Image (cartoon, rainbow, N blue to C red; front, side, top):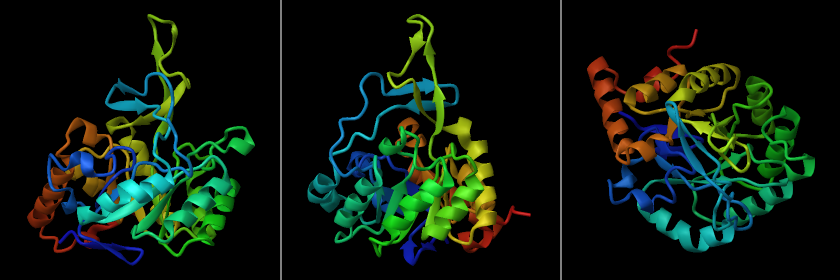
Length: 300
């Protein structure tokens, strides 16, 4: 009923744990069998280990949360040596989320992942391009095209590109990434925002700006998934503020072949299991035999 296929990879259901919100999967095994999920995206990986940002990293805001974690991770080699073997025992698709400060970082990280048994690579192009003054790779379409096309040449793994809502033109960005060789697209990443501590009279985060996620971004994410799914002919994985089965169904109807759940995992550690059940119940109630019957059904 919920089975779907993305880039030749079979998913038992369209629910995927989003990068940076589910650790490496082990952290949630005390709550439910995470193997029931369609897939798990790894914590964001970089070529070399990163300690992440200093100062406050997570901040609750109206109908959502902000984070400035800074891609703290053990680096690709340690991930492959220590974390990946455990992830591969979770009985679900493993998607490696890869970031970098230069195109060379992306290339080297992806090359190291090629020989592993991960199912897919999710390229995070929201990372700051250190050679271009810190502007993210995912802001300008031509820059995104460059990094995606170079990574595409280095791997035979299905390549999913994660789009930033801060892109100058999300539809053009999607089109250029498709043209560069992306097999699928995931969107949206966090929205750039900030918060101010009025007692201290200064920004809450050391980096001033942070990533906003949660229910507050859902209408933006849903709109972008709708627009992008009409513009390109590759699978779309929707994310942004999904808190329950109804939210997930909305994204499917907007054109997503699957969805990722993120912030909800912090609010409700049982969310993955519950959302799968709620989606199944909806399909049964509506007499829908397969989730794929309603992918993009709300598009005009």
